[in-house]
Length: 376
Image 1 (cartoon, one colour):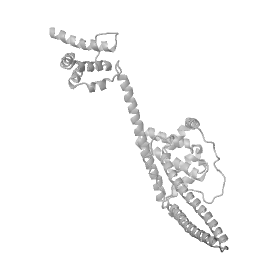
Image 2 (cartoon, helix red, strand yellow; image 1 turned 90 degrees about the vertical axis):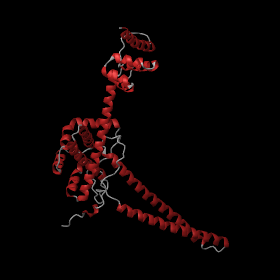
Image 3 (cartoon, helix red, strand yellow; image 1 turned 135 degrees about the horizontal axis):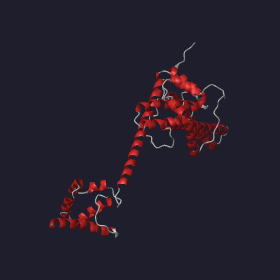
Image 4 (cartoon, rainbow, N blue to C red; image 1 turned 90 degrees about the horizontal axis):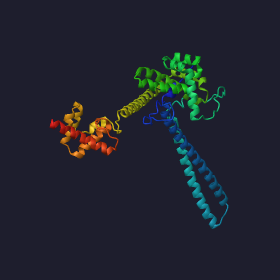
């Protein structure tokens, strides 16, 4: 029995290397960001080939017309006809040269295509099977609301099973569990595992995150294999496990590199979530600190002169009165008004008049207390 030749997998594209993808995407599956970049490169290459093919067809059409014109004019003997024949022959020669150039470009494009590295979209294309069993039917595109509701319903029903699958380690265990629970082979499971990874990283459960990340990439590879074969993923997950358990080091490296790249993205996303949560917490704390005038006492304190800061640090009213007496009256009023608005200073005097009156009373109050202290 002949052995399977894995040399055709010597050039496998191990990852998408699109590390600058903006983290805020419209799908919970973070790995799709990188996959999309590779798909776009493939589509651009295919379009280039199609454009060259169209140009070659157009060139051959024009050449055929030129050759027909030469044949028609070759029977005429008039001087004008001979001149036209000469032009037609020159055009025919030019088009033949152009045809050879397009053919050469097509050959180069074909050679370049053969040298391109394989990836998860091209590794398992069905090149000879004619079976139509288990073909995934065409489905109507779901709205975002429908996808969200579908995901929510699925998770509510199978959350325990998804988490169990996320904790498995061995290939055989994963395959057996999916065989017993084939309904887990779907986008909803992959999406939940991604969110689970980010949650674990935020909670600083790094080792557990890496384990679930492995199972996330397992599910993603199965889904991409199903997409390339155009079949229901529940009908091809065994093919993935058969391939991953018997593949050579190149294929294993492809999987591992995809896994490492995904884990880096999870860490990046978790960091963003933590920073956002910290900012929200700080904003909430700041709102709690705001004084009656809507100013933050921490921010106001940091803008005070060092000698005034010392007064508040030591809670020494006499020291504050001495500092104010040495300051410019306008500057002193400004600082005291900000202290009142932030709650750093609570005046004893009560007034129901406007802010300007409250400011004057407060400053005069401090000066008055200072004068009374000196009289005593």
